[in-house]
Image 1 (cartoon, rainbow, N blue to C red):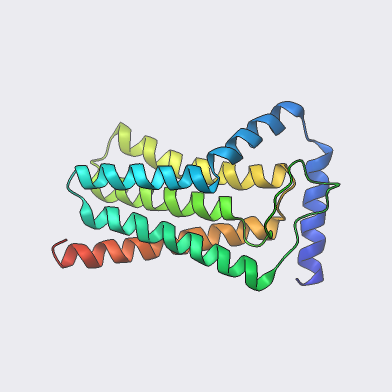
Image 2 (cartoon, rainbow, N blue to C red; image 1 turned 120 degrees about the vertical axis):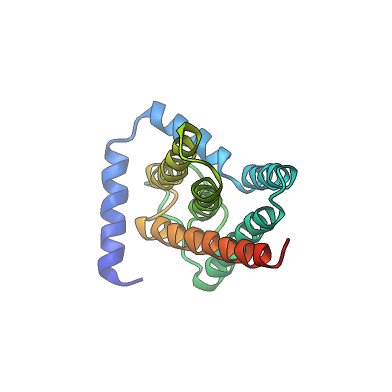
Length: 184
């Protein structure tokens, strides 16, 4: 990792550690559980089932493909780069995997990025669409910040997680549109 990026990563970790509070640690710890692999698998399966139930098979498959891509790309990059987690001095939680990119962040951006696409293209303008799109922006951003706040990731990890997640969502959208053109 280039030294300037690492210096910024450490400075951000240090600044967040200085302002850490018990109540926010508890909040972001719960949010992290809501964004772990099992929770995101459940969200994906529920989203898949709801889309199929409402006659949107192509979108359901696109969601599934996007989430699989997010998981695969994140795991591949974690193993290839093998970036250690931040020092225990900054960390509130112990995570057994490598840091780069943030899996929680990539999954959140992939899932909610795809959900935003569905809301913007399938939902009529109105309250529900506004709620879904707002949640699709707010939740992944909060997840990314929470991973920083808990000291389990560097800023560069969560930025990479955002990129991986949005790329995976885009792949899901491309697949869904391709399937839709073929009558799925």
